[in-house]
View 1 (cartoon, rainbow, N blue to C red):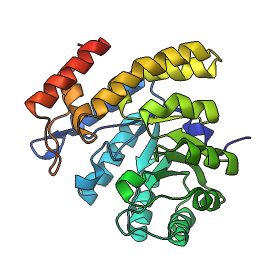
View 2 (view 1 turned 180 degrees about the vertical axis):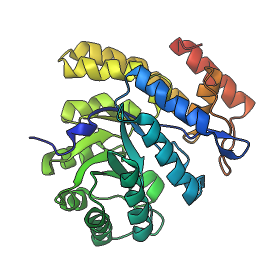
View 3 (view 1 turned 60 degrees about the vertical axis):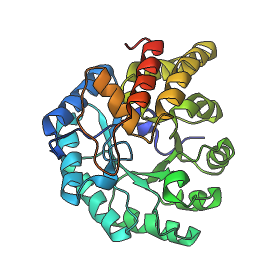
View 4 (view 1 turned 135 degrees about the vertical axis):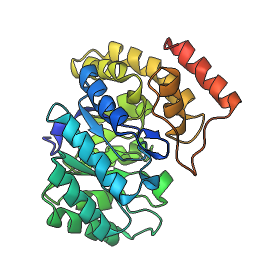
Length: 295
C-alpha cells in the first residue's frame, strides 16, 4: 500500500530545547540543527515532548520553530510541534509553523480535556481545513490521558493532509490496526520499538535517543531497508539497552539532556517542574553510557 507521508520516513529526531540562564539558548539551538545535518539525520521535530513544549511560552514556542526552520534552510526536514488541547491555539501555531517553512506539523492528541472520538476528529479536521500543511498525528495516551482508538485514527486518516502518525501507545496491536486500516505513514514513537514497527510496515522513528546516537539509529534503518534483517536485529539489540536503561531512569527529557551534557554537548538546564537527575541516577546513566561505548 502506498502511504501518504513517506516524505517523513526515516529518522526524525525530537530535539531537546537548550536553555541558558532561563532563556532559550538560540546559539545552541542553531548548533543542534547543524550537528544533525552533519550526522545525516532525516528530520527534526522541535518543541515536542522532548523539547519541553509544556514549559515554553507561546512566543518562545514560535521562536524555536522559526530558528529551526531558518537554520535548516531546506537541508533537513522540519516537523514542527504544534499540538494543543485548544483547537484554536493549535490552528494558530500550525499556521505560524507553515509561515516559517516547516515541512509538516506534529500534532499531539488534545490532552487533559479528554475529547470523545468525535472531538478528536473535529479537532484535526478544523486544523487541516485551516492550514494547508502535512499533519502528523501524535498518539501518546500515557501523557494525554486518552487514547485515540484505531477506528478514530482511521476516520481522521481520511482527511487529505493528515499524512502520518507518531505511534506512541506502546501497543503493537494498535499499530497493526492502524497500518491495516489506513494509508498513513506510521512512525514509531518509542525508540525500542522501531524494528518491531518496521517489520509490520512502519516507515521510521521519531526518536529521543537520536539526540545522542543518530548514526546508530540510521544504521538500523539502513539495514532494514536493504533487507539485511540480521544486521537490523544487531542494531536493535545494541540500541535497546541504551533506550531502556537511559530513558527508564527518569521522565523524558531529563536523562537525554543529562547524557548530552556528559558527552560534551551541554544543552543547559531543565525547566521546572522537571528537575535534574540525582547523584545516584547520574551515576547510573554514566554507567549506561560507558557500557554502550560512549564514555
